[in-house]
Image 1 (tube, rainbow, N blue to C red):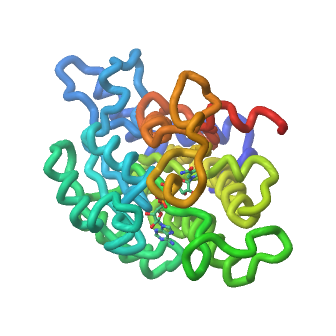
Image 2 (spheres, rainbow, N blue to C red):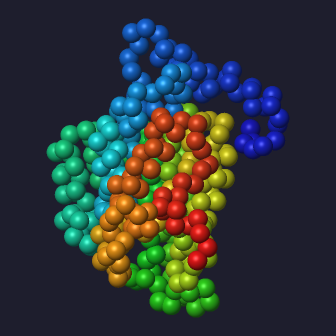
Length: 322
Ligand SMILES: NC(=O)c1ccc[n+]([C@@H]2O[C@H](COP(=O)([O-])OP(=O)(O)OC[C@H]3O[C@@H](n4cnc5c(N)ncnc54)[C@H](O)[C@@H]3O)[C@@H](O)[C@H]2O)c1
């Protein structure tokens, strides 16, 4: 069946009696019986009652793959999901990516460190998200070791050139073709490839939440970082399109768009304004935990009816012209 706006109200009502919709409705009904066990994280099951606050970050029973989680925002998100009880697959392009800005000696060392904290299970997988063979292998490993993925966070990315560092030049007319491909691959194409490897399984199970990563650069015209901005804008639109296709099987697809956030890479690669580090003003840099909190919201039960949305977590920075 084609997923889309065609078909009218009958077409929308019909699936409720069949397939995954019927089993989801049964599960929701069973969960309301006296003595029923609490449901596992609920990337899915709609609630019939107000949620206790303690369930807002309850990821018990969930399996999360967080790409680019060897360091920075991905790592903070992985720690947040883990603290909520999810089993988490850490991922990065290489074993030593977490060491680049001094966050951990290696991906395996980070997995060992996080395992000791309790919460869910932790494993580590490596692979280039722009390479379909790497993506297939890493997704297979996660599902073999942890079970079906129910939360996918596509955090890997960045404005990184083919040979490392920032593209130079990095404007609209002069960036090299090699760097255009590199930036599109590690952001837009990579996000698509991971979705294509994971989301069909979620759809078949009628269970899943995907959170993609945009950037404020994907909302406004920028120079430099032009291709990076284009790649992020493409991710945001892909999020809406995939969300539309995934409405019938009940897989939610959303995105967060962070403003400048004080990750180790961010602090190491640019001059920062000390007056924007702290304070009550929202005209400051975000803390990694503030981005992770938004991701946890979109992954969890509180966002059970939220899909196709882009949540800007930028202190209102993109509300204003100039
Ligand atoms: N920090 C910010 O200010 C900020 C602002 C807006 C958006 N973002 C986005 O948030 C995400 C995380 O950024 P961060 O600041 O934590 O950066 P980071 O560099 O610390 O983390 C990005 C991770 O992605 C990995 N990665 C990059 N290319 C990859 C590839 N091809 N295959 C596999 N892994 C790859 C890196 O090795 C790294 O671990 C990125 O998508 C970034 O574009 C960050």
